[in-house]
Length: 468
Image (cartoon, rainbow, N blue to C red; front, side, top):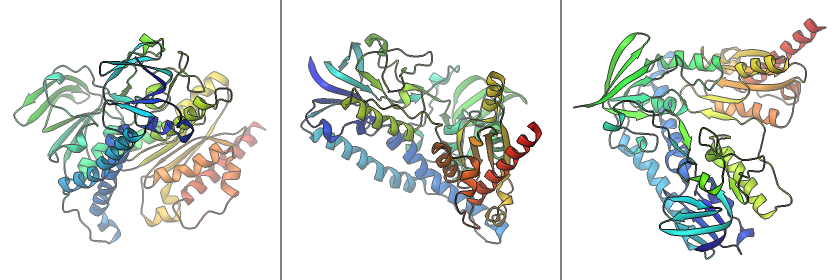
């Protein structure tokens, strides 16, 4: 059996756990797939490299409304795939070669599973670590749909490398993966049908955001909502999905099927229970505030621990684990502040903190009240110049502390606008401090956020007046 000071399972965010302070350690890195993990190879990076040109394609269709005669003449799918993966694949290979070159690191390229306490089997070899970091991520969830095993389908792992742009892409699922790929392929000329159990898309977002996104999506995509899939079958041209929905029975035929029904942690595939590592009923490896699992000497970070399936949060957890491995008597905690996120569809969405439904549940549980306001883009000078009629920023705040509890933006540059609110929330500023403690550039789009904060302050003042 090979003995190591540290074993790292997963070369995504787990790759950054290794630092110069570990030059004297004997380290094993285990990776069963492409080096660099989900974000680099089949997640955040390549999807945004598609979303940006998709945004350009959508904008080109709507220039006439502003007196600019632009149009979309088509997309070169092969050129885009070559551009994207021609840049990404060498980075992944470079990272792999670098880790192989280090004298104190052994790289095991194969599937591993636990066989005992801090002990794994990989490629027929058993290895054991004084400490183990599990950073093995998550995978696409494949729902139990009759006939699905008998038809060709893609997940987010493979859809970006298909040889040809589909004529009709059918997507099962209504979350952020479905929303982003629907935007990409429709923008480039594909017909897109989205099949979703819920009556709204992006149900994890605030209800107002979900409702507005669904309304706008209906203008671009064929939506089959409130749907129950009865059977999937192969056809000469691709696949057919038979379903029952609010409008009755439907059969949808397309040439490419994308399953985007969510993601699940890979803890079960690692057989973590065999090492005394606890999981929850969704397969997430349970961790404490410091990233420790229930098994001594074993840590878990990133998607596999179920805290957040977000690359920026995984990177932060990797920094914490890296510190804690070398400082057992001065442990750092994982960031417990509200985690921001974005959906890079069109319209774009950015959010952080409580949704209104969560704020209402807090009222029911603790009696702590909240205020909420909605600020339209069109009410700010730049939004007015854009002739934007659908985008907005919604804030939820605590009238007692005068702090922002949740922020939800839908519209152009939502991921950047919400960052202004993330900063204030994470620094502990009140809405008053965020709004008047700085000078806001006029007439920048950021004034949407300034005006939203001022409206929230008015709501706080009105609440105090009513209570007084």
